[in-house]
View 1 (cartoon, one colour):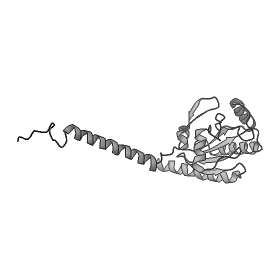
View 2 (cartoon, rainbow, N blue to C red; view 1 turned 90 degrees about the vertical axis):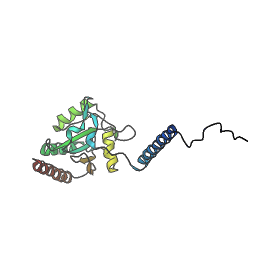
View 3 (cartoon, rainbow, N blue to C red; view 1 turned 60 degrees about the horizontal axis):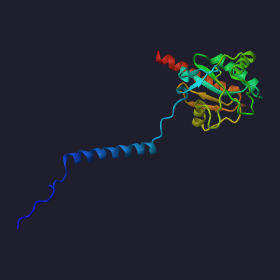
View 4 (tube, rainbow, N blue to C red; view 1 turned 90 degrees about the horizontal axis):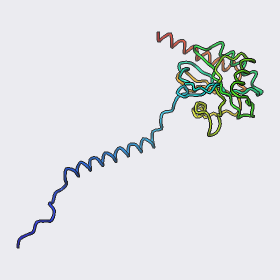
Length: 210
């Protein structure tokens, strides 16, 4: 009795099938690596100087212009019990150590006791007329809640210290990382000592790089 051939040729696999299997395996491996990366590796945090903010006239300003300097970031207000002492001391710091190696960066905020009811132009005019302020005062922002200014949110997330009133201060190094935080009642002599030390380091490094 003659044996009939099978209806289809018996082949282990075709070249196309092998290519498909290789491609499918590569896709699976890539997907698995991507999932592992999301799970185990957090994205690199930005630094403070990588953000953009608005100036008092509503224009975009890149904070990268302050990279290489020490900066004291402060949430300011015009109608607060700390206003007079802080604005005077902040201007003294800026005059003594700025603007080449250090700057104060002020962010008005109305979230604490509604003590900053003024609009941007009025805030800047008030600070200049009463305290001779020469440091930058940016557009009024929110620093608490879901609408918080991203640059200020970075300060809070980096330190786990959220302002509870006006005139909290964050000292940022030339690389844009927060190194010190002070409450509004902090003695300015302590702040001045840390600012002076950082400025000395900046000057020293610049001389070494020459």
